[in-house]
Picture 1 (spheres, rainbow, N blue to C red):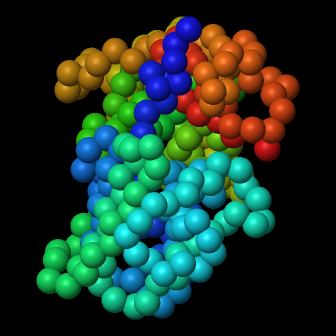
Picture 2 (cartoon, one colour):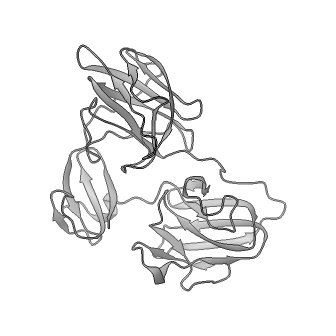
Picture 3 (cartoon, one colour):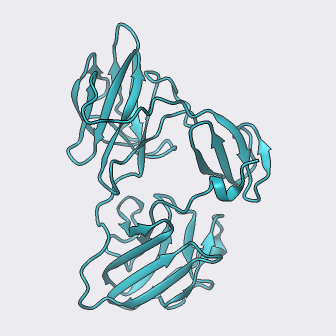
Length: 290
């Protein structure tokens, strides 16, 4: 059996969020730390009077904070929160100033190092892009299955550019920000047509504005795809534009594990509330069932 340590990796990113941070409590604009190595993250910048905690992604859990609510932001051991409970959402209390923060998740317990950031250059990102995007819809081989959607990863850390290959046939298409039905890169108008290779305008969509592309092809066609969130363009090409690796692999779920490494199911359907690891034929990832 594959061990949890093999399947689980440290988060690719870590975010600051809170009224002490530059962008407040907005999940989608939380300050992004710089990942300096696997499981180690750094950030330098100005903080205001208020509170903050740390997130792994654009969701409220998992999160990291102090052992007790309201501890002053200082070096020490952090607590990871994996279940959303009213009484465990501990946040640091911050006094306005310039800070250098370093978080290390590689040891037995998460550690934070807090230093005076006076005179240091900013480190981190005020604008951030998804770690990956997921082509999904009736035009794809995955159809509307979140688990089977192909993952297109960034060309570089926080580049906002995603490349790979997808096979398309007639149907609907958009690109999710994560394996979730929230934000996506979709069309600028509902049912914007795709009938051949070319460049197409994209925009961020959500439940209130769920524009999808209408793909119309005589037969299934494999395209090299670039999703550029910086220039807001989707480019489909029949020829490999820049040595894009073949990512045309469906990620079939083989097993579901709990955090103790025990296989609990062959499918995520019907799982009780909790945190699980889905082991796929192409990749593995964590899910939270509420």
